[in-house]
Image (cartoon, rainbow, N blue to C red):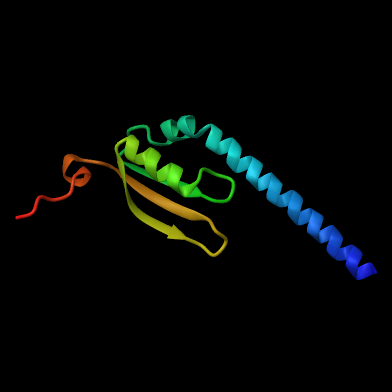
Length: 100
């Protein structure tokens, strides 16, 4: 009986933790335009960290593209965090090379 009670407590802690993460990510997504404008502000190189409580990967990639940046590198770790590196697009990097 004690074991069942322990697992019940662990279950509810996990549910609460997951709900907290979802709220934080939803809040970040709601402010995505502001976050992306502040991040992709014209600098040549930009680094963006993604984790469970930040903007979604797709939101960052598309937002960077809309602001004239291209993804040049990404690295992840086992905990789910990811580092994205962007460069300001030039006319050569923004369009694919013409066939010869």
